[in-house]
Length: 103
View (cartoon, rainbow, N blue to C red):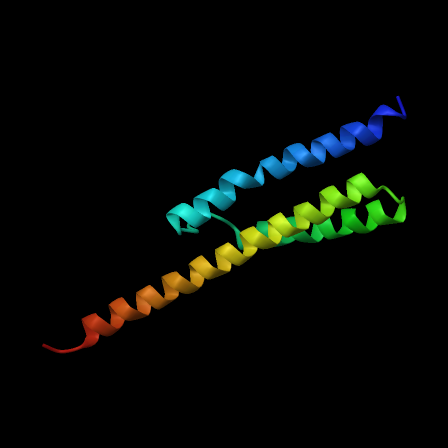
C-alpha cells in the first residue's frame, strides 16, 4: 500500500491540474470574470505553496512538480482575473465618460 500512495498522490495532482483548464479557457475566451472569486483562487494558491513546501521537505520530486504546476495554474487564473477586472473598470470609465459629456 505504501508503494501505491505516491503514485496515487501524483495522479490526483495531475487530475486536479486538468481541472484548471475549463477556468482558464473561460477567462481567455469569454473575458468575463463575473462570479469567479479572486479570494478563493488566492487562498488555493497559498494552500498550493504550503503543499509545495511539504513536498520539498519530504523530497518527493513528482509531488513537488505537481505543486509547482498547480501554483503556476493558480497564478494564471489570478492574473486573468485581475486583467479582466481591470478591463471591466476601463470599459466602465469609458461608458461613464461618454454619458457625462453634454450634447
